[in-house]
Length: 278
Ligand SMILES: C[S@@+](CC[C@H](N)C(=O)[O-])C[C@H]1O[C@@H](n2cnc3c(N)ncnc32)[C@H](O)[C@@H]1O
Image (cartoon, rainbow, N blue to C red; front, top):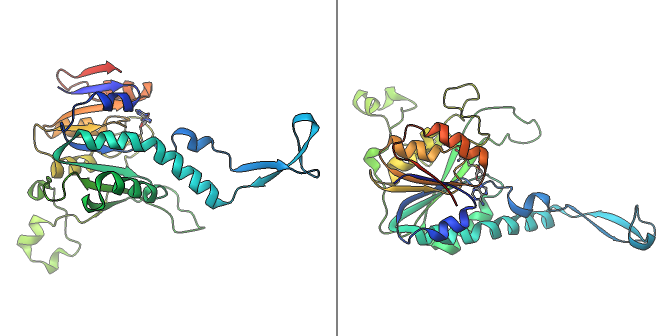
């Protein structure tokens, strides 16, 4: 049965049976929890300070160094993710796998956490999704990619349907002969794909929507028709749409009302789809 849950994903995950999902894809909001509100400054007592506090005492403000901020930020985000990722690992089928989509600034904290939960030997790929859209800063190399970490529950037994992966054109088809050129080549761990166009027909209006083609590639490669795909940071429901198009079942979770409203519309043609308030 296809399901969409409205609510915090942790209790929903805790209610799902062990070893029941072939594939989990998640794209968590990286500025979640306390991380966003964490102050980057602190105040200390100082007679010459610029602020007045309790009982008229003077304080001065000091900026925390970038390192202190990064440490706090990383810890808060990891503390939010950890119990959810432990549940994800429990829910995965013995040959199941997790695709974890994340921003280039957070990926390193998350890799360390996932290595601990899954085991370093279960890490299969870091996929770089490269796009080319929007303004380019002139102050540093313009960042134009996301990272997707792929972990298998068992590195000796996992699904990778190499023949189901849509092939891509060769860069120099003239060099490989007409037969190979017509067949195209297997994508590597660097995926070039444009973001969801703000004016295209795929657009739902949900700000962090990911392209359905990225999800279809993941689902085609790492699950079988009829399997269940879980996305517990579902947003606009891209995973549900891709799973449905490829004949997989899906379970989606989001705690944002707007996300649920977008999914109701987007997944309206899925027969028997249930919306559940968790
Ligand atoms: C980056 S968006 C996902 C976008 C999605 N991949 C898509 O293509 O539309 C992350 C989502 O996680 C949801 N979220 C954040 N914290 C959550 C929580 N504790 N439980 C359930 N959903 C949560 C947010 O509401 C947001 O929709």
